[in-house]
Amino acid sequence: MPPLPASGSAPFALSVLAAGGTGVGATASQGLTNTISLARAADARGYHRFWMSEHHAMAATSVSSPALMVARLIPETARIRLGAGGVMLPNHAPLLVSEQFGMLEALAPGRIDLGLGRAPGTDGATAAALRRGADANEGFAQQVLDLLGFLRGEFPPGHAYQNVHAVPGPWQAEQNRVTDAAMGPEPWILGSSLYSARLAAQLGRPYAFALQFGDADVDTALRLYREAFQPSEALAEPRTLISVPAAISDDAAAAGRQAATSAMAMLRMFKREGCLLLPPEEVEAYKATAQERQILDAYTARTFHGAPATVAARLEALQARTGADELMLVVGRHSAALDERGIGLIADHYGLPRNCPTRPIPPQPTIEWSTTCPHHAAPSSSSTPSRSTSRASSRSSTRSATNRSPAFA
Image (tube, rainbow, N blue to C red; front, side):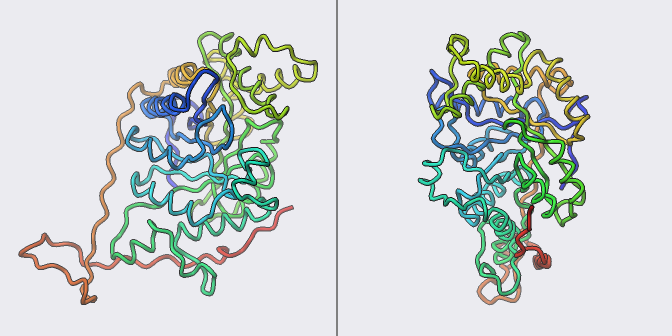
């Protein structure tokens, strides 16, 4: 895994997470168009990643398929990494996810991330409609192992999926006798619990902790991850990311009102009234009970809101306490304009470029003709430019852990 780039003067890499926020009064098309605009802005301002999360049956979000949105954003951006933060793996077949993100990696080599979560991203009834069983979470670790096997094109001899191949992927490149420049999407383990920290550590994968969900113990989770980390072929040392809800504005009061809109959405979900991003005026006019007011105030306070310097101070305090390598701003309040303006303000605070230079286009894979197969003889030099005749290197040896399901407390 390549080293993280600097984000201006920030002591951490800076990234953005969006969910296709669609507030009351906006259409799905407007919400998705705003997401595209936000991704463009994050790309131009030098943010490292732009992730989108999977949600279902929530009026406040319009991204039910992060993979589809990543495909839409590839031609809209030049250098920023794009990905899912995340795909809720128990909702899907690992083979299908591997193929989808293999396609994305083929379209944008070296720019695709695949964050894996185990929550349903919706309510119980919708989860059932997704064909997600009641015991879906129990098989998450094995699902991750299967997905990693498909991405690498490696399963142990005798494994049920030994002759099942994700395409695009390493197997296809080998069959077509080419060296594929694409390294595959970068898998991350996502979560807000000690379970996810243990899984990421045992698999030797980077770990993203979602601080936007309740009173999650990020300090203990990151400490456990680092202590239990086992180096892998993908990652030699622990790498951590923390996502934090954010609402940034030159007008601190306006940022606070926007933070309250997402707090109200959480309250509505707790009350099973549906996730809505109401306008600030409706949130302020709501007659909350004492218990509801406690929830609203708590979730508003959890959002890193205020002027750029105020939010930056909270970010730096969090990083100093946890040692996180990367902080990801979770945006998606009622005002899409405030979200986009906010990431620009933080970029200004840390001196990120205003028009980040584009990343060079990766070299295209070299086609390697076989001289041994009678059906695929190399063309003569008189009709076709010469090409490399070296054979593609064989796949690396299978890791012993591929078919091992981790044990967790």
